[in-house]
Image (cartoon, rainbow, N blue to C red; front, side):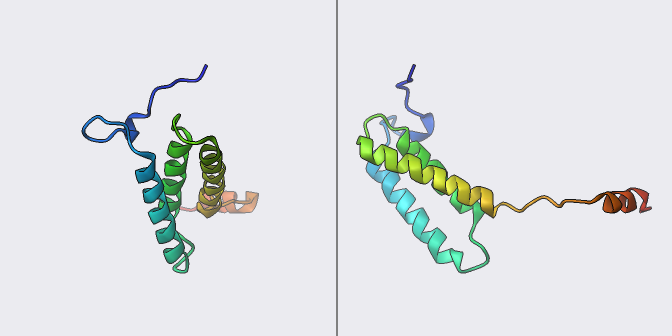
Length: 106
């Protein structure tokens, strides 16, 4: 069963539903900042995460045209992959490293 409730995060301060045009404008703005800052370091994972959430919010809007909803959903999944790939990988220790670390006195 599909819920027709609108996400509270998408409500304007005056209680009116958010306009899809504003979300599209915001996500395009965020994407351009991500691209501009991508040359510096390896991109900002926080910014990519916000882009992913905006696209997901757009995809969840019931009154959005089906083709735009599908595009936003697909792009949110792709940005999710960018976020996952940009996150720092946890250090992997081999057995010897664990043994040495366990015997280290501080």
